[in-house]
Length: 232
Ligand code: CA
Image: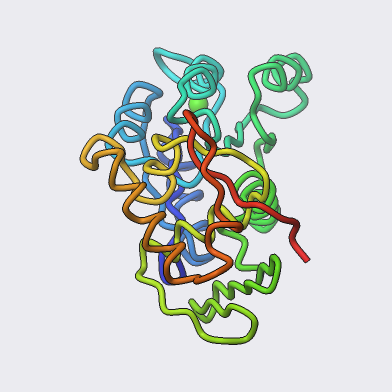
């Protein structure tokens, strides 16, 4: 996961604000993809699931609100962190946006520094696997910056996919992920990979962890997988 730059989809029709968002996010370590309409934004999401979406409220054609609603209602994008960009002081927008399930709001005009801070906060909350924090559960320690895993202090060699998979599961202890969600969040796009690929990687991961592998990563019959335990 380390070395993988979070992709942020920006859906904004005004070129000046597109440029401002690009100039703000790129130097802060984000990979920015810009769409000028909600329809193009949805196409971009279909091609590749971003780590978060910044969506302008007022767009030509489908509104930002409708786009957010659509993302929330689709199993594949249900967990996508969404920040809405709204016009100053429009409390009505804020309320309907909260009902849509957006994670946060940025009011235009915005301070670039605040935007980055709010985006990081949303990513930490909704997608802690991108936070960069060391995670430790039951003697298994995962250090994202070092791309290293140790089991009771001993190094554990994992391939890049198994590392990402473990990072996602350990970042959300007790949450059950189905295979489709794991494919989207770890492999990036479920349409080109078969679901049994997940099972193969889970097997590899458990084997690499050793005795604790079966306990740490639990099979939830008929649903998927979850990480057992509490972050220490
Ligand atoms: Ca607009």
